[in-house]
Length: 306
Image (cartoon, rainbow, N blue to C red; front, side):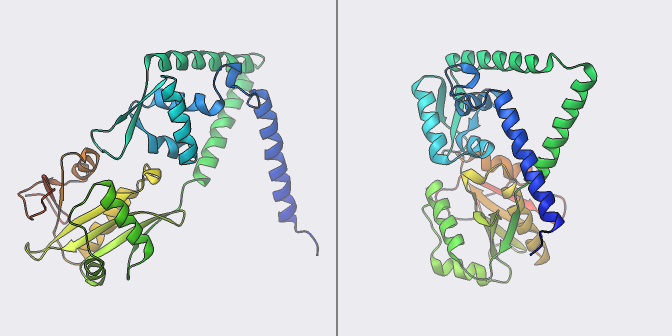
């Protein structure tokens, strides 16, 4: 069977990129046991950089940013914490998260790493004239732009027509994450899914179920529904999934003639409350008997708030 020209081109492209990767990793010394011949591996140094550049970075956001296995990065964080370079504290906004900060020693080590890295790049640029430098920087920017666009994760939001294991697992994770007392029974979930003016939406990131939200019609308030069970797995946060789920929920509610969406929360979930307020939810009177709820919000989804 003859080999197509497209196959040859692709093989040549792959070979060219691999060759450049070998050249650049050697040129920057990335194959050495320790980054910049210092005391840290490249991954450890990158973790220190990310924490230093992003005050109060969460562990889950760090995993997402670096694309590393949760177990591996947890071990590295534990090591850096034992070495008194990194501090891990429980988030006051979301008890499920750990906030990462550098200790004074960690900040000093990072400053040394940044200085060494800057000197390395200066040495790399030193032989180049001004024109070649500009071409190099423009080319790097173009490469980053192209590859970043190609790597945008595929997001899919689905309103369920029947219950499935994805929704069940996500709901159970949500209950445990926020210590829910009043949990939905399987029958209650089926009723929500089967109700024409209610629903459950599941967010898929690269075809993996990573988030959910529920809308339940409120019989006690005319033209109103209730937002429940908004949850995104920690490793998937930072991709706009919570907003995408709420967008889908609100569009559906409007299509069913609803005018208001209510929700309850409690004071410890500051990150979630901040998200709701950003989306236009305003404080309202208590509308249910949820014993855990301390915060009550509502949003007018068809016009101005009143």
